[in-house]
Image (tube, rainbow, N blue to C red; front, side, top):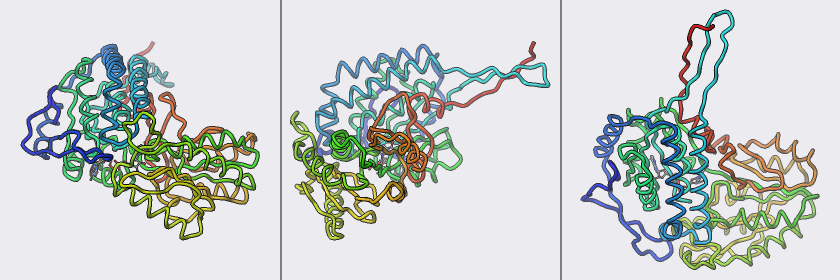
Length: 462
Ligand code: NAD
């Protein structure tokens, strides 16, 4: 456990292994619920929200330190997660940007003054930090997933108890050191590691935790929400995001979007393209271009700077993807490229004529796969897009703005992007899902509000 500004000695630990080589990258403590309880009570006793300008200074300093150490951090992320260096280098920059944006927002957080008709009084609203925020994060993008929770929490003035994924906890611990060096008061941050079923549940249900912000799978999210009953909960869960391509689309753009959105992070991204829904007879040309894009991706060693697609987080995860590809092929989909498994590696796969009810596209498939579903018209595209339990983001490629707006209105998702993929991302816009994809919104300023309470103060006026 990382608490009071340092790693505490531990008699029991867990090895963190590279998905690619199997070698031990590091070891982390197997914390107990009793240790966690003591740490959370310590935070409660010591926590005093810093002034907003101090919060901003800490966040700016942390961004600076991430940029200074980006090579070492990128390598650590690649070693423990298997995500290739070309992408983890981008992840460190994205994390630094999120910190800078949070620093700006920390000084902009302000309430309203509200006249109160019928009374000679004025009401003021004041944002106060919600208190101690528990953050539970997934294995994919192990730096940025942690930053998008801690940066707004620090900006809001909250203390944080972080439980990173047991698969990728080392980056989170490295970031904790950075925050301390950047000036975060040591008693404002605990990082706990260990068995998720033990400490995850203990955090979510702890009486001194005021809010739980969770990113991970839909099934774990439901368990966390049950354990956290009665607290403020923010859930960022799975996705099964479509890219809808209409007959008048710029096909070169659509091909490029699929090449990025389906294969980035080896397909282990909540808002990656999980389904390519193509309307009409442009499908042949689009599919040919997507196969070309897949051919251009080099799969293999994540530490080789020339690698585009690293392994999945584990061999078990790759076996699931392999099985789903085989299931789709058995249901008459055509596997046109890739899809071979070597241990935890799946080579970038393109499938055409995938039936909309194949497990590959009904469930969230966390692997480098571009499954093409052909549909007759826009109405069918909308039906297929909405036909899963998820509703995170979507992209539509068309030159017809009226067609886009009617699709945007009909899709049950958190965001729709015209001529961009579902993976379009900015720290300045809200992010989150509907249906089984989640509850609440991230995006730095939106998270800060979720992590704040509004206190109303009224006073005689004039
Ligand atoms: P996961 O649900 O297995 O684990 C997420 C976190 O929950 C981990 O820290 C894990 O240790 C913890 N956990 C496990 N059991 C727990 C329990 N009983 N109580 C409390 N915590 C528990 O998810 P994962 O495999 O690490 O990540 C992949 C999933 O995350 C995918 O479904 C992906 O779509 C989703 N995800 C969503 C977003 C988003 O913003 N919507 C972003 C990234 C990933």
